[in-house]
Figure 1 (cartoon, one colour):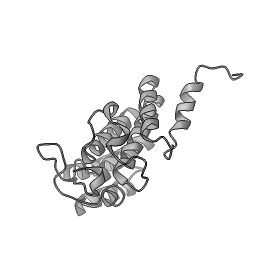
Figure 2 (cartoon, one colour):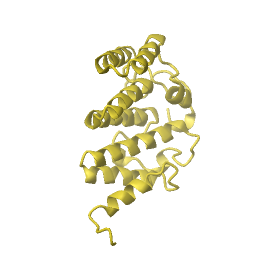
Figure 3 (cartoon, one colour):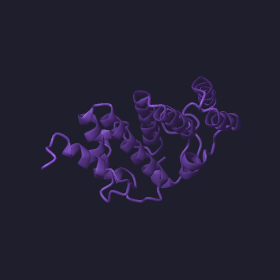
Figure 4 (tube, one colour):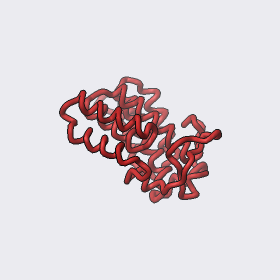
Length: 186
């Protein structure tokens, strides 16, 4: 199963790590296709109850119990932690999203080993490769914010390699890294 096939699965991985049932990647990532109704209800409740951190977290935990690796649940946790200023937790979820996207697109599990020809990264309409790139960008950014410039820069350089047209705007973050440590007069 590849990103080029236009079909992915998000229920449970098989012995090879590929996902078990096919759905359109755009529908899964953008529209929560395949998400059980009860998990969708829990995510909606988390959004509604966001001001109450404990209640919001409980709703997210319920959604995770029902659909543990569905991107909609992962994205819900990502947003919860990010907007709550919990960047380490956000990075952990971001890395889970990156792992999910790699498995779903049949990419190498180590982002450092992924090459431009492994998926149609230049095709902005290809949802899985685009989601993978967004995850890579987010994790790179979070590493920078967490004071891990080498890790952040490495991820952003990989993003630049996979997205040479800079459709996702990762180069601006690399420019920030490159400017750090320079005098303002440079």
